[in-house]
Length: 322
Image (cartoon, rainbow, N blue to C red; front, side):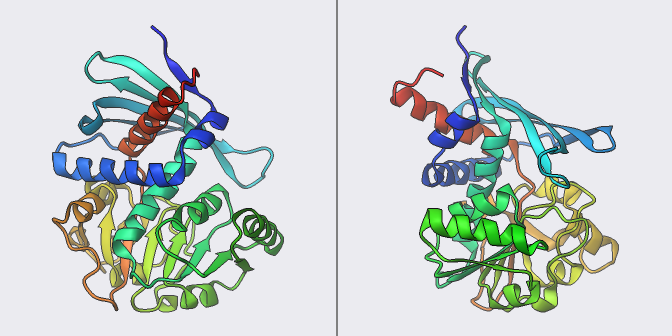
């Protein structure tokens, strides 16, 4: 049996942003419409700074099942930051054979941003023009690259604690993308100016506060994917129309929601539904121009399977032999 393997370089070349946005949008709609319970992400702590994550599941819409297997450990080249090393293993449902394996770090970086872009397209105001990114790592870059495909942003603000790091990233993205990316260490100013905000830092403590966010803003909560790290305060959680990627996952593993719930500010009913329902038209997304909308991205393996299937099809159509 010949199993296709795609390394990080091949993933980055084949997994284009517009195609991946469409693929994850279809995957999330299928997830919500299927009504089939999916296993939640399992995290095993190996050492103080090393975790092992297992994300199994299936996506009937494309006849695929499989899992993402990743280690999360500190990156020696970037002290204080982590890398996700591993693979996405996609099986063909009809034969139950492994069809493709892809570098998980590259897939995750792109598909997460594309899922955010799809959600933003559905939930942000049509006239949104200012984007603020809170964080300065890989997800900050991929989110800027992805979100420009769903809104015509004329201003992009990049927030981080290190002025030097964000200035360097902003300058590179401005040059590479031909758009103005402005670095700032003033989170309140960035949030108060933005129409769309993405938190992609993985911060242990809130970096974005409800008092900073204007009415009508759409906020994507992305950086915390397990109980523990909390990127935004409970006031913002309580103020927004809260839509999850996968509701059972959010109820069990969304840290900001858990903190607000433990404080008695919200209940499980605060999670009004899933983004796939919004895509399908069975759940209202934004209900009014002045409403604050929240999309909680924990990440789901159907996004990985859909992205891997898409890049595998592209490779086959282009005659690429991995």
